[in-house]
Amino acid sequence: MIAFLIFISTLYNVPHVVLLLPVLLVLFKNRKKTILLNKHQVYILSIITIIVVLSFLNSLIHITQLESYFNLFPYTSLMYASFILAYFLEEKDVELLVKLILIESIIVIFEFLFHFNTIFFGAEDFKKFSSFSILYNSRPYGMSANSSIIAIKIFLAILLIDYFGLFRNNKLIFMVIFFLAIVFTFPRTILVVILIYYFLKYISYIKLSTKYKQRLVAITFSLVLVFSVIAVLNAKKISDKIYDQFTRGGKKIELAGRPIIWTKYFDFIKSHKWFGNYSQKFEIEAEKGKQHAHNSFIQIVANHGILIAAFFIILLICNITNQNYIYILVLVLYSLFQYGIFWGVSLTDVVLFLFLQGKPKLNCSMDL
Image (cartoon, rainbow, N blue to C red):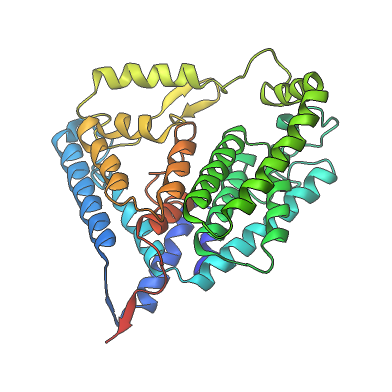
């Protein structure tokens, strides 16, 4: 039920506040249990509390700058909700969440094959595709509001499968479906981050594995050799096709207006470096309406100023371990080009806190 509600909150036209329902559910379900925390969980709660208190004080000191007294309630307190969900999620919940994302991935493939972007035919941006030469222009949405949302869900599902060692007997089937859906949604940032993720995983396997090291190196060398020969024989054709996809058929890689957005954010930060937007979420006016920073770290500095933003970085650094560093690193890399982590409460934040809390992360409570 918890996983289902979390998944529902990510779907098209479902209000984000729905994500608070599973929080209430787990608190009610576990109301008679004693909470046991490991050292990482204690660090996380301590730093969250510092961030929330400082955010409240930042808003209170600048109360005359706020639109209403309601804005004194810091959105950063929603980080407690992400922590709670991550704490109480059990392996069966994570499995169900991944399965639901798998179903949506199958819908993505269905949409692509039948040439439309969403199964919600009444949606304002519903459209049929006439050309697939540029994947970016024919991206399906699954059951989400846009292709970026389903893409990050798939990416998180891949990370969760590896982190918890799920679906060992069916992993290949899951991965084939996920990778097909990822290619069809063509999220350029995630595609690059996935390559980095598997490179880092490969390096870690080489370091940790002695039994299979020689076999792994031999297989890798063979694959690299085969692909290198193919690439050399078709270098111009392959490179042109890949380049066309990442440039959307243009002459250079377009960052969807990010340089302009980042410049405006940096201008704001220069004049608000210590207090930011008084711990309110800051957005700039752009052609397509209000825009967030498309970078989690620029966003938190603009929202809070340098001092409070530093504690978000500390939250990450203080909880990195040998087991979770790759997973946290790729989420950070993704968040350099998207507003990924630090929304307050979101699926991405819940997964981040899962990784931060340490492995294994199963049921950490006991009955009174």
